[in-house]
Image (cartoon, rainbow, N blue to C red):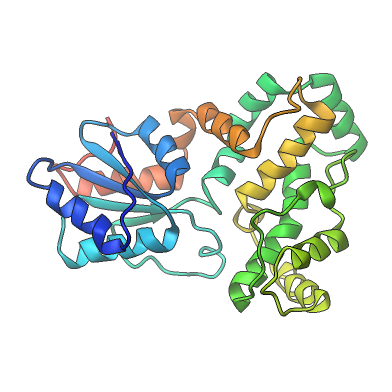
Length: 287
């Protein structure tokens, strides 16, 4: 069962859960956003575990902390790690869990679900041509180019810059023939897209470069939405089957459908949630 409400404050979300306890005494799994809730609903025991969608990471965290302070039992929080792994942000509760890497989308693309997706939606010959030309597999092409964006995202978070990544037009800085990024154009487009930004292109590039000198897991640096935006361009212009009208959200929806429970069972997140079940009987998450 999916419960999505739109109250005005974190207390409204928390109160809705607390008030429901007279009728429901099972687990609440709190996640951020409707896309994550759709994935977890596939895997959870819907009679024993209700997946609760909260609009943002910040809101979800606030709601969870309110419930913890009230000593509500059977509450679990799952968040996209974003850059928290890289910034060594510690978990603030034994009842909260992060995605294995940056977000749900990177977990899916790094799994065998990606191969399932490619078999269904790509022209095998055209994809092979691209991979031979670049001497790399598609996953590697997507990761290498998303990394350049990811380091700028990370620098922006760490420095509290007012860079606006939402509504970027990726086609303006991605080369349509090979899915590579024109880095200078990307930074220029990002600055144009960020009316509140006060940072120069030189400073942005330097700060991002400083982060690149560290040894980092690329799956923690890359943002899943950047990967799927690049994949969208590839499907539209290089190796897709009649997919001119496909969108990023549709791609992410199909990837979620391609992500099987057996793939999820290989993750640290799954094993963490299973251990939580053992420690918090009779509360259940899975069948």
